[in-house]
Length: 141
Image (tube, rainbow, N blue to C red; front, side, top):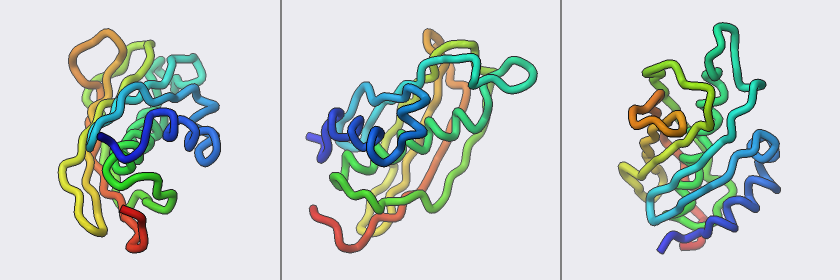
């Protein structure tokens, strides 16, 4: 069982990450060390050239990484991103973006997470991200 529920995480979006909630982001699936999150498509995501912007995909990946980490450690608000890398693989279609991720390693102080981002309805990822989260030493486990 994950140490946080989908409802708990979506409430965190509302209270702690209003920018994600304003974008319509919501968690769809959550398991121990895994998660799936969606951001509905809107024209405000587009950059010149008609593609979904990199910052939109980065926001989605980072929020997903947070969900994956919390699924392992519980509701710890001060678990924070310490490194983030993204590779843009393909031009996303004008559709919802879906990110799926998993824990690669979780330790006492650091968690490493991998994320693939897809355009809804397509099998091949449009971006791949990895990130490291710092876990506070005084957390409830």
